[in-house]
Length: 211
Image (cartoon, rainbow, N blue to C red):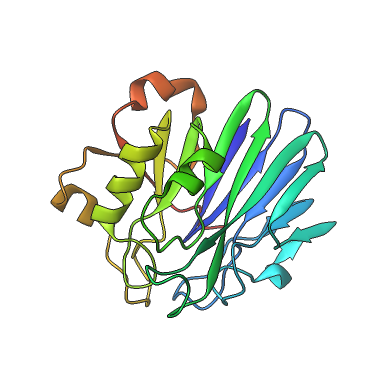
């Protein structure tokens, strides 16, 4: 499987069979999303920085509701969750998506704002890859992200939704993870899953693909 980081909470995942899923396409964050094409797009919620489907080419279907799906050799489940710590009273609902393809399990937390719960942990399982927001304000912050990582115990954790160069949103930079005591590793925008053993115990901070 090939995974590329397109910035913010947007990742392109391509299976060995060539079927592509793109998560949370965005606009309005201060920098532009790279040109993207994918057969399927998932949106964790409807905010502008997570549902800019118009910026994606070749889309057959947008998946933006909880439920179980099978598409192009992929299995995925959308798990209902909340965008804040008060059951959606501040910012509404969020969908956590769990993907399975090529013998791998990947979990994209969207704009998760709530703390780990038995319900969510049971549904998520123990993924090989966990994409987790870290910037705070609209999601869990670095400390909250670490709580999720400790609870889920993924093979590797990948940070997202942080203030990268050019970002105009009121969110913290990725270095907030180190301030919270995390061991971080900067990696290229293409995440090399063959190095998972090397990445164990670290939170990956991917560069953003810029074109």
